[in-house]
Image (cartoon, rainbow, N blue to C red; front, side, top):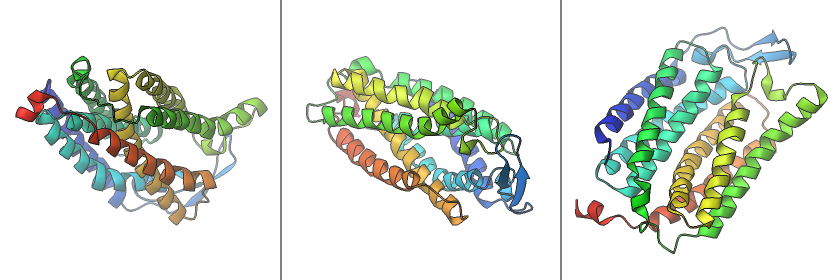
Amino acid sequence: MKFARSITVLVITIVVLSALAASYGVFAGGGPGSYQFESLRSGEVTIYGEGLYKYESLNLGPQARGQDVVTLFLWIPLLLISLRFALKHSLKGKLMLTGTIGYFLYTYMMYTAIQFNEMFIVYIALMACSLFAFILSFMALEVPEQKTAFGGRIPVKILAIFQVFSAFGLAFRWLSDLLPALLTGSVPEQLQHYSSIPVYSMDLGLAVPAFILAAVLILKRTTWGYVLTAVLLVKAVTMWTALIAMTVAAAMQGVEMGAGDIVMAPVFNVISIVLLVLVLKNIQEPLKSRKR
């Protein structure tokens, strides 16, 4: 695999630092417990008041803790497993590696934008390592050389439809909160005591366009379309799983979750898993990979 040494160093660094950050997030105790805080724009907000996320809202604090559980026990092992197969020149391994790194990049970009706490420098390091590992792992895919890897049995139209539906689903989910607030001069409910909501900008500015682009490219049956779709499916599975854990963690704290939050993540996750399995099953490994 191209850039094997650099990618390995970056991935091991991500593993060590994310294990530290996630462990601290899951197991750290202390804090005053939940209390009420009068915010400048959203009125009275309940603060979580526990552990690493003691200054976060009762909505976001438990969600961050739930995501840390998934990161620690599911996605760090997946990152190591996918690295192992990628180093054996497996295209499937490289795709899994790139998508899993994408999860860490998205997650710690979000953490640096929201949560200032004892792990903040670690979050910055994780964001940086994930960014450069993501770039190098994408370059290591050597996309122009993979023209024969994606067979005719891959359900192109279904994949395109699902990605368009994912894009519009995400856009509707966030714009239904954002647009009424902008039009009426109020603030979205999720703003709480924060000054911005990074998930809006990251999903609307990155995830939604990426899904649309991948859908268009895979309908044209370009190699880039297949690659981008596979990477996005891995990213989708990791993120939807995290969202399920986040929803459960928030609900356990008594936070009322909307029907969309409860239903959307499990449904999209199951579909993403099925489609990812279908794509990986129909990838033809390059000859040089199979000879090793």
